[in-house]
Image 1 (cartoon, helix red, strand yellow):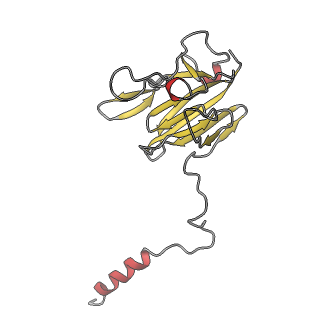
Image 2 (cartoon, rainbow, N blue to C red):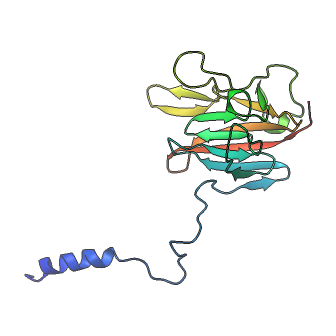
Image 3 (cartoon, rainbow, N blue to C red):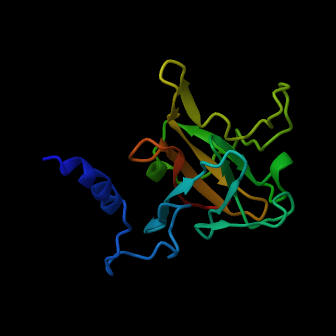
Length: 195
């Protein structure tokens, strides 16, 4: 029994050894940490975007269903949405040159919206309330519970159109992943006819 304490450090070291099985992917293998995987169902796409970085924007092309890396986001038209934590910017107004506008649509599910609305369109505007943050067109996408500090998507979807005529319907599905990590933004979208 007096040898058991001397075995404890050895057991701890063995328990911390790397897994050397051949069926385990190498640590250097590319990992899909940014998107959670694009799912396509007909014309509808679903994607989870890792927007956890506090100082980095993640740019998404709705047309391509892919993350992009614009050299100059203010001048680049390769993206529609940019995400940083709970901030969602569109490539229009003060945020970009693609002339993206959004219109909130109440009382519709994504599949039920078949045409872009006639009015209610807006884009990202300069800071109007002195908080140092632009007035994002999608700034009302969530409801905040001050007691639990939880963000829940508001009960609305959005129509989104760019200056070239491409239109989409967009649902913000969630802000947390299955283990509760914030800023894992779930998006679902599909094309709409031009307005």
